[in-house]
Length: 248
Image (cartoon, rainbow, N blue to C red; front, side, top):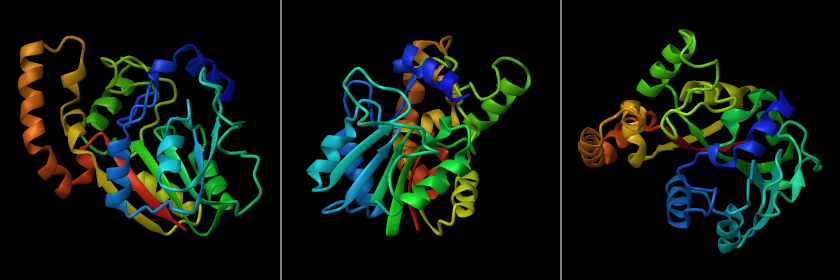
């Protein structure tokens, strides 16, 4: 399974999808804003970025006055990661880090509980995990279940990215499942924020379907841009991605 995933993302680097970017650059402003909303302070801390890709998050971490280490299963063209390793077997001593970032990689891990347990091992007593992960406890999740159950897509492949192009190991995670996974790994503090710009994907994933007429897509985008901020304040899980601060 691990080799299959490595081979897929080596051959398809653009299939990695994140609201922060990461393929060619990182959205510094959005990441700083999310850190502020979740109360994440990095100054003087040591940070491990699991699933780091090309390591663009390093710039944001160092801007905040923290030290950075990147780890990934796949070596990128940009020279990252600094460490090649699976999330369930990271080659660091216990209690080595103050914070772990896992940005739009966790949904691809074959054993999420084992990965969360490894994060817990590596964190110091006051440590935290910052997790960005798709939420499928919304309409997008219903579409994913339907498409995979009735054969339109293989299990764990559907996602509303790149015009519904099949992913590799795109697990169906809901906010409740995120809590259960990390509680099993002995985490106890949870804070989550939604992403207003992705309410459209969470509640109307057809907006990115390749057959969606451009005129209708444009009107839907304008509508969801208007209601998105209010919706995620009431229901963070309405947006496709959720941003988590998970504490020891």
